[in-house]
Length: 523
Image (cartoon, rainbow, N blue to C red; front, side, top):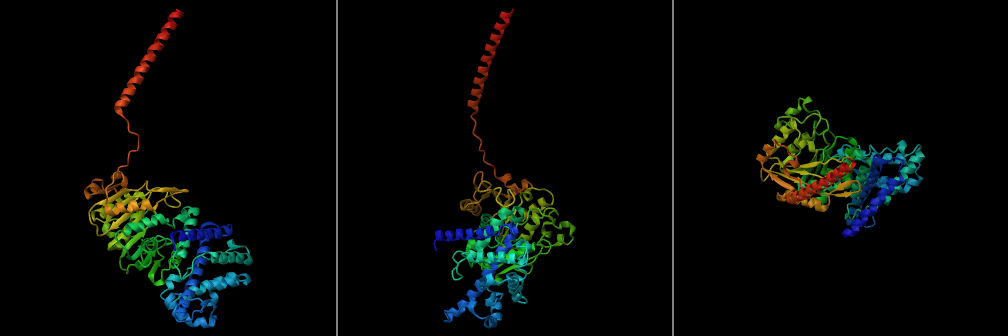
């Protein structure tokens, strides 16, 4: 498929998604409505995925007319155990999206039908290896929410429109994965609602351009990675960006993450499925990463990408256990209780493979604040873990205009310097936000990879320079901003001033003469 054709299909898909949101506006408006659209998309996806998996096996065995969706439920039940083992879940043909949709107009209890189907999906995985990946996935899809309608009939009418709208989305045939339509639709929907929801939505979503930059910084010189990790994974779009940057099947060991907010945790797991990540290739945990970290027993991660929450409160020194935690103890001090930023940095460093790279979005204050944060920066620099600091443009993220930066960490650096890049002007304005273009990203990544010194853009600072600046890591300390003021010719300016003064003297003399003449005439 040509790039033009792919782009046309994307645009058509995006228009269809917007049409669904517009159709149901006023029912469950804004950020919360995403759960209904995403849940329905996920229901359609797993239905088609399961159906295609069974059909493909029968077609290859010679039964080219076989269709699992048309199979009697009693006969299909015989496949339950094998399909749960292979797919992680099971649905009877009568529970498939296409069949529920076909009966929707005549189903006076559609809300209960959907509730039973969603329960069946989760129940099928109970007690199996995939249980953690499916449990609670539909908790935010409340079919009896009064916002859908004041009566069952009104709620069912909204649910019918929702099913029909998602059915009309051109998400491609399961036999062709040219445009990754389900995953693309998910990201578009998340971005659409995040942009309209301000901070409440933006805190769950890292814009695609920033995600690409982080992933490319973390994969310089690599064509594939083993295991990708995000300690504050949100809805998972940043975690999955390695698929876009490196290509399918280039993340060999899978995706790992942790998310404190249970609603966002559910969105992340849905996102994994919609990007066709098998249930045994991702492990997303729902806990507070800083005080209850998961994945202790996993191998370290060779790619860590993250956009953790900025300057949030955490237990810090009020929890006496944390100072002896092997993630934090090497620095000899904990991040302040009201500013957990560097706690996420220390956690990521501890989880990083010896030859891996971590690229983490940071609040700018962590680069220059004194006290405990200065001591942690000194530890990071003195042990040669900080590879680069990149200043980003302002207004890149939904819900905030601050100019964030990126810290790149490595454990096997090739020099003992820190690369500082001032990319604050590397953007274009799109509606109300700034965006990184492909050219912007290319310039930042190539400068980082080649350690290039570019006047007013980048500087490789040696350890002594960092030490002399008391481990201040603000880019502006090391990269001098270009003076865009108009150059002034001092000689020319002095000559002009002399001319003005001489002219003023002449005027003053003329005025004095006029005054003297007037005074003489009066006497």
